[in-house]
Amino acid sequence: MSVPGRPRSQMQKPDAVDSISILGKRLREWRTGVGWPLKRVSSDLGISISILSEWERGRRFPSGKNLDVLSRYTGIPVSCFFCNREDGCPFLSSRLRERFPQVFH
Image 1 (cartoon, rainbow, N blue to C red):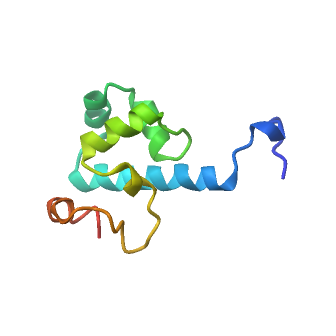
Image 2: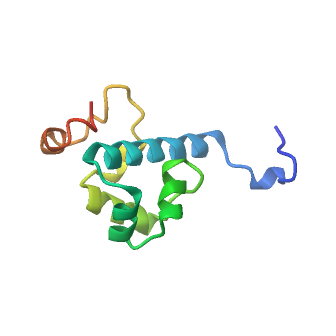
């Protein structure tokens, strides 16, 4: 498959695209579930609103350092950002599920 204007070598593999989308979905679910706007979360994390928005929309992927920061900030283990199960991530602690039931339904 080829994308006009983008060399094949620069295209992402399907698994990478899926991981980025899943991470973005989980991050947005958490943020909206706790009722915090992009501005608050981006300010707390020390990143721009546009970067956070791009992470949530699956257009960019956070660095390893930022994944760790996201995990500590949200209380969500890094592995759970990539869980694509319909019934939620099996590794989430019961404490997180109790604290944010609207997010991990």
